[in-house]
Structure formats: C-alpha cells, structure tokens
Length: 454
Image (cartoon, rainbow, N blue to C red; front, side):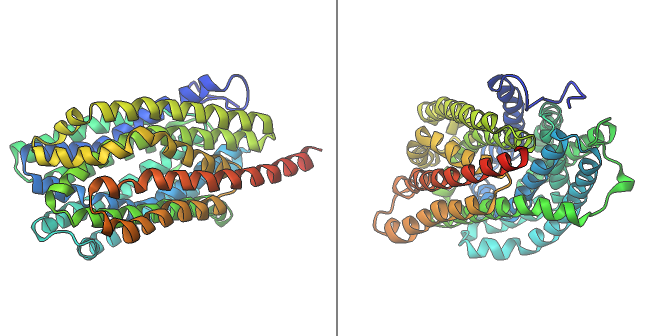
C-alpha cells in the first residue's frame, strides 16, 4: 500500500506514533494557514489603527460561513480517497481525485463572485459599526477573489492527507506564509494600503500554496497523480463525496453562523470590544487547529481501517486520538490562559482592547480540551461513512445552546465573560449527545463488518 516515503501505513503497526507523525505536520500546517489571517491582524493592529484591526476581525465569522460548506465537503473527498487507497482501488482513486479537484475549482469561482457581491449586505446584517464597515467590505471583497486558490489548496491537501502525507503541505504553507508576511509588511508599512494591503498579501500567499500543491499532485507517481486533461466531474464519486462532505460542511457552516450571531453580540459593545474579540478569537483559532489536526487524523485512520475491516484498530485509533487531543489542548489552553496578556500584546498595545480580550480568554482557554473531544466523535463517525446524524446533533448541541444563551440569558447579564460561557456549555451538551450516537452507530458498523467478513 505504501509507495512513497511521504505516505503512512495506517492499517498496520503501532498507532500512537503514526498519529503523531500524521497530526504534527498537519497541526503546524493549520497554524501556518491561520497565520495568514493572524499576520493581517497583527500588521494592521500595530501599524494602522484599532479600527482597522476591528475591521479585519469583524469579517472572520462571515468568511467562515461562506467557506466552510465547501471546506467541509473536502472531508468527503478525504474519506473517499482514503478508502480507495487502503483497498488498492487505483482506478477509483484516480477518478475520485480528479472529481474532487474539479469540484474545488468550480466552487472556488462561485465563492469568489458570491462572497464579493454579498459582503456589504452581510456586514450590515451583522450590525457592523459605521466607523469600520467600509474597511471591512474592502477586506472581504479582495479576500474572496482568492477563493479559487484557497479551495484548490484545501482539496489538494485533503487528497494528500488521505494517503498519510501531511509533510509536503506543511512545506508548501511555510513557503506561502513567508510570502504573506513579506507582502503584508510591504503593503501596509512601505506602501500604506491598510486593510486592502493585507488582503492582497493573503490572496497572493494562497496562490503560492495552491500552485505548490497542484504541482505536487501532478508530479506524484501513485494512484492520486493529477492530470489536468482528466479533470472532470464523475457523478458517482461526487455523490459519495457529498454523502460525507455536505453534512460536515453544513455542520461547520451552521456553527459558524452561531459564531456570527455571537460576533453581533460583541459588536454591541463597540469597536474596542470588537478588537479585543478579534485578538482573543485568533488565539482560540490556534487552539482549534491544533485539536482539529487530531480530528483529521482520526477520520483518515478510521476510514482506511474501516475499508479493510479492522474494527478493533478503529476503536484504538479513537482512544489514542482522545488522549492526544486532550493533552495538546490542555497544554496549549493553560498556556494561553497564563500568558494571555503577553499574547494579546502581540496584536495590540491598547490596554482597553487587551482587557476585553482577557475577559474572553479567561472562560474559553482552559476547558478547550472539551472542544477537541466534541469534534473527535463526529470525525470517527465520518470515517465510518456516517455524517448526517452527527451533523444534526452538533447543530442542536452547539448552535442550540448558543442561541438560548445569546437571546435568552445574555440580555440579562451583559458582559463578555458571561457571553462566552456559551462556549464550554455548548461543548459539554454536544459531547453527551455525540457519545450516545457513537455507541449505536458503532454497533451497527460492527454488524456490517461481520456480515462482510463472515
């Protein structure tokens, strides 16, 4: 099965060391990808103004709403490719890869036009303050013009993750990240373009990472080799990608819609609180991508082992992933809590902004391991091909809890601290529901595996 030094044999041998080998480069890759936005925030916060910082930050939840449906669908491409690769089905693997890359290109173009056209309306609906909305619109419109590059990179990286290759995407993002830093500094300090400058820098860096990942797939010798002349949509594979990917995308989109509602509540405190939330939310973003890397590993390992009928190994994968995710989130969460002032000081020197950020970090960082566990269970279920039910439960648990909190309780206790208690509360509610779901789905999958092997 393993044909390249970059691939990982997920179906044989020890598990924890392979999970770490898979997760660590992916974690670093995700951190670098998040740095695209973090550099924007730091540069405008340090070299422009707090209003520019608020303007860039106010777009985050909206951008995620627009993008996460299609990014979620890439998880379907990952699961399908992992299954075909583990089973040695080279023809199906190749056709699934070309369908996924074509889908990425089409969805990226659609997102560019829809996102750029709807930016002002969406920001108006979120009650973005008048003193920052024009800069927010400028940032979003430029950012969305880079969506084709963004989508092609993410789908290409999903294919590489399916075969266990997380190292080359890390190298690609490191290259793109350095380009992003250089361009942001050039276009804000040397050529004072403000938020437009950092948006141009981010789009340019996305172009770099896109070209590198497509070049990598084109040069590959395995069944996932990309040939541009073969780009097409095969409906049988598109349907299978959608079966796993659309529920995952809807889940992510709806959860980010709840974050947008929360952003709207933060907006009611004014631009200082918005800037504090922007900085704190970026720090939480680093925690999220760290635990999400383990979730991605859980999904890929589960998918490959499910395709070859190794049920006991699937159970061990989930247990080891819980240990790894909780450990990483515990260390990083406590570190973010203890060094909160220093971390927020990287983004801004405004004491009022730092105070608002600390209020948010004080309730969200230490219990962040709960978020990791909450995402792991649906990741394992998606690896087994079950995506719809965990999507529904995640929406009910996460979004439902936050809606009740934002509209039922928050108006009577108006503080940032109380508003963000909704985070750990929603994580706990969702974990309980997902655990019950996993118990029943696992029993069903064991029966199916015994029927196939028996």
